[in-house]
Image (cartoon, rainbow, N blue to C red; front, side):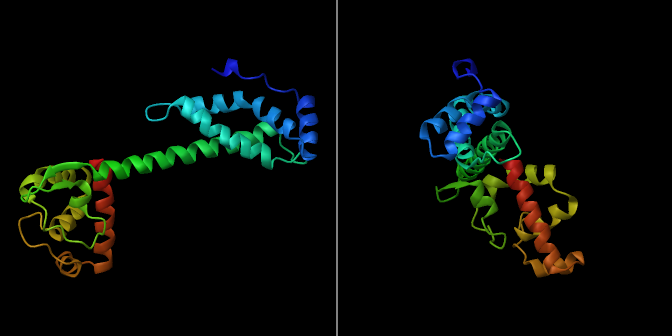
Length: 207
């Protein structure tokens, strides 16, 4: 694909165009962008993979290149290509991180079962968006086996104890953090930290 892009400029050609760019020459800006598209394709290829199409990454990387050319100064000690590479890579990485975050949010909201009233429930319903929420409205008969598998697989014994007591997964009423802290001989704030860390582990495991 990169063979279809214009060849890179020589240092002399690049400096001449950068001089014209400083004088507001829009054609020089266009030429600098076009002759650095191979660099975009090269960087995009490194990050291409499942969920990240190379053509899409080239389009995103080109935005970074345009920003680089627009902000580059010939007085910089680094070559335009070196400066542009960082801008291109940053643009691609921001896009990939954003896509991962969106996919995670979507996967957490996907329905995984139905409660006793016939309503769809998702992992967000099981774990809650606020660690202080009690999920006693969830139909445990449907969800308990999946939760127990996740809890036993990714949590430490202390984390298991806190989550089990906090959300009533042992068949008892969910207990407040203060009561759990008293039973375990630790502070309530420490229980809160354990709970938050455990819930994050469960979210990662279940997605």
